[in-house]
Length: 235
Ligand SMILES: Nc1ncnc2c1ncn2[C@@H]1O[C@H](COP(=O)(O)OP(=O)(O)OP(=O)(O)O)[C@@H](O)[C@H]1O
Image (cartoon, rainbow, N blue to C red; front, top):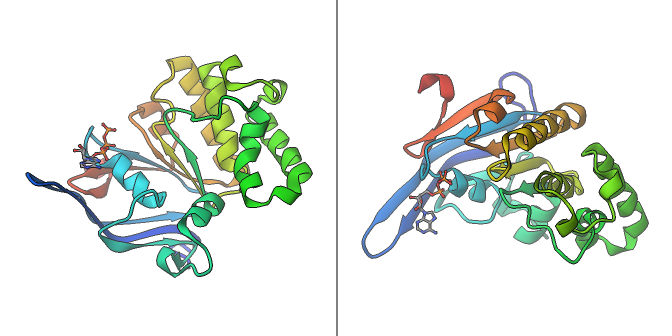
């Protein structure tokens, strides 16, 4: 499926709604939200604290389910992906980078990067190792491949997490405040890395951020307000 400009749509959200309900309140956080992301697009989602950015990213990342609405990856509705379960779709189609790196402490950088691919196909270990090494080169950490997370700096750990997110060649890379925990200089380096991955690998990326600097390098800046997305200029 292509959009009006002839670009391939990688992610489509159609009228998503999400409520959080308890005895006292009903929070309608995501309201009839639509979004299309095309191949090779780098999109940022900004918004005030509590506006629902992480909630939205969790829906896109299939970590949570919308109350109503449809999610399509590469033109296939998630509910219709037969023969696969949600964990498999998540592992094979999506890459995640969070504010905290969540690397496994007992494994080296290289092993951490290999992990999501090994989970998919353990028999291709040599091939996976080669690809993981290439990705570590891409994030400029080849010389740290055999170090464990506690031997790496915060920025290095985040770069390993980015390499890990790319190991299965995801259709879309999702990042939630990827530099929220890093100093300015380290953040800048990570921003450059996202930019480079997007350009060189034509990787589609959706990033939730408070960082104006990161938002600046994105093709599109969207603002989450009252449950739906607006072009930032409209706000
Ligand atoms: N599991 C939950 N149950 C009930 N309410 C929730 C739940 N998760 C989030 N919320 C509420 O939904 C709203 C949106 O939360 P969310 O974490 O998506 O916001 P955010 O825009 O990512 O915020 P921040 O920028 O501070 O991280 C908040 O008011 C939050 O308290």
